[in-house]
Length: 225
Image (cartoon, rainbow, N blue to C red; front, side, top):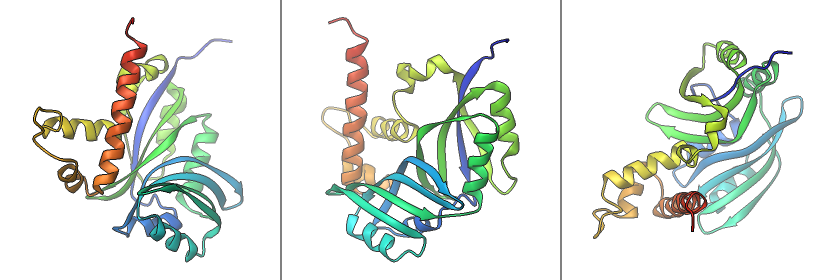
């Protein structure tokens, strides 16, 4: 059997990508979805998953409690960071998109990032598969969904230092550097960065800590001590 070259591709999908229970989060200024750690179908039109959120966790609980789609949930976290476990009902594009991955033998590399942009919510994720399977999966995406490929490369390079940070983290780091956050003395603050991104200062602080930890860990692992 001939071997095939595996690659990874990072895609952005927008428009009509909705999970009704989480659409409520998109409409709230007090809570936001950062990423989906994992999601899996458990029955026809039913899913369970883990979702990272930031903001007022009491608001998240109110939104989940009042949702007709949520069958079971729990929230773990402190301050302005939390993780939702939820079993919920959903239909439409999510079913279609997951079936496209399964049908084309594509591996979804979790987590899936969630962003709110001027055009509305979008999801960003990485898939792994052969060139042909990835292209067929992209071709199968329904016309009502905007799909674009932002990065593609050999599978082995996915673990290189350039891929240490998620796209959301890379965008924040680029903004922080441009605005002079790492200058001495600092030329901007976490609150100013948060205002630019439309999130809370606590969220920016937490994300910067995660970025710095990842970069320093990668540096230490690749430097002879």
